[in-house]
Each structure stands twice: as C-alpha cells, then as structure tokens.
Image (cartoon, rainbow, N blue to C red; front, side):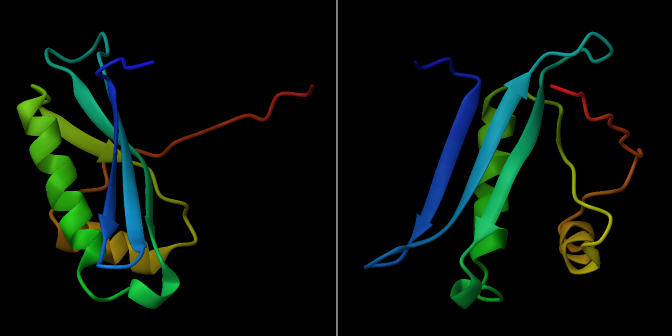
Length: 105
C-alpha cells in the first residue's frame, strides 16, 4: 500500500544493487513540520568506500526536503564509531541518547 510516508531508494550499477536507504516521514507533536527518519542504510561490503552511502544520503536529503521535512534524523548503534564519523562528515549532529526496553512476549 502506498502511503507517501515511506520511501526506499536502491543504488545500482549496471549489474547489481550496491546499497539501499529506507526512510519514514512522520509528524511529531513537538515539531512544526514533518520529520524524515532514516530507518535503514545498507551498502554492500564490496561497494563500501566508493561513495554509494553518500549518494544515498544525498538522495534521501532531497526527498525529505521535497516532502516538506525540516530535518532528517537517524539512529546508530553505540558500537559503530566508523558510521558515526561518516554521519558527522555529512553534517549530522548527535543530539540525543535513545533508550529502549525489550518487552516479554
């Protein structure tokens, strides 16, 4: 079902998929405009450090801007310092600490 709130973009070369980025656009009560959240960014191990992630992020930022979002956010596991450096290099800033609680089934 098409909601207009979710987007997935795939980076490809002539033969195969090299990576993908998935986004979710949502409204939050504390913000005036919608927010775009990067829910997944994956680049094939063999395609890393070739600019694929940067291209996918750039495309996601354009989509978010065209969708009326004021900002783009993402979460990244604490044990991924290389990913954190990559996001900072692209202008993302750490602004919160996320907490979670696993629910028993």
